[in-house]
Image (cartoon, rainbow, N blue to C red):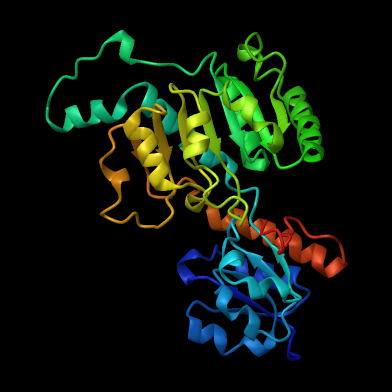
Length: 347
């Protein structure tokens, strides 16, 4: 095998689906396939690597002289901001975008149901062998409310379709007006394809989702009952959700972060929750993980926190493998790859 004609799959053996190596070898045109999990193991083969995939340490990318393509195993590529020098390297970067929508949607709505139906209090009462006493006025529902989704891409659109199924109005936010128009067309097409499934909510959401540009966010915030973050983390989105942002939300509104913890000024969020500026928050991510014991977020009664597992799926590695195999075929045929990341933008 010629030097520089090797695929490195950086995954623990327990995570590699059955037959995956043979399938990668076949899709890769017979290229040598090396399975490596430890950093030392990976370093020993770097001079041969043409393609790398999996949990490959981003810190080693600059040490791979023949690297042409990195198939990341996750959707986020936040490490580009921590290692800006990698943006200038000539390799092509693709992500696992597209495999998170199902489980993240269920996770988001699980949090919403838990908030609206007071499940944390009920579960706590159960642990004490107490019969919880609730009032009608303490409960809430999703139907008729408005969900504002910042980052209206593949996952955001999935959130929107589920929200409409529960009778909610949906406003999606994209970075520019041009992308907003494209997203509106895509959303309209998806809505038409699933019209039968959505018929129960048709009376409430007959007009479909409204997609706006980020520049038009202010007016939409005044309408939103639930604000959902799914923006990528870039220099422009770091601490995007600050005291000014929370002050512009409705006092009865919820803030849900399903994107990146670094996009939220957590001191400002804690202040907004303590003061009643917003009603509550649902977080699956935090700026520092694990969340430090001294963080004020731990003790807030109007916050529900999960430990960054909304993207977990029992068949996650198999789903990402399918993206990698498809891209390997495209790579061999000289076609455009799926999920190409603009390294300068970070997504």
